[in-house]
Length: 118
Length: 110
Figure 1 (tube, rainbow over the protein chains, first blue to last red):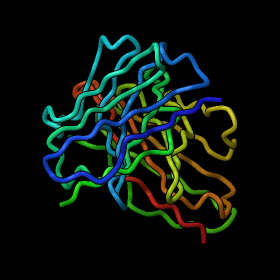
Figure 2: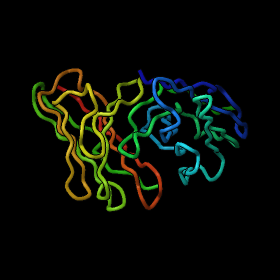
Figure 3: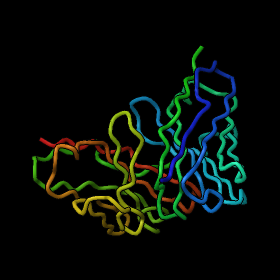
């Protein structure tokens, strides 16, 4: 069974940093592109970033303007998102999600809540 | 970044058919199609159909996806109370090198 478990969310002050982690199991993690997708309270889904299986290709949403960094450790079956210079509008549930070779984002974690507030 | 366009809400009666639409452009929906996701309040999204309109294992045949040009559609037949949820479309945008999402459609089953 595919499982994606996010951790690392919490309350942070504006301008602060946070590192999210996603532990993957139940599939060959090293073969799949992975994504981070976020959802602000009461709002729709917003794609954040994706990373190819070997980290050769990395893409970000233009709106992030270089504040976030995605990475992965295939030996640990883990995906990460380093978030810097956090703002109030970064407040959201952050989902780790598997990309089925471009066919679609097929598995989603339960999400971790990031709240940015003074 | 540019998103996909979905109607905010659709209401249909029990056992009726609902068709949800998603409009993009030639760089995303018109390029290789869209995927559809279902989300209940407080839960993560669940994939209903891939970009090639195929359903993942375990998804009911009542859900079917299609595409015409830059518009993708999700048709839900025999509406049931449990179909009341938010539905999102998404597509890979080749010009942005990014997944783009629609704003979501809230489906109400009367």
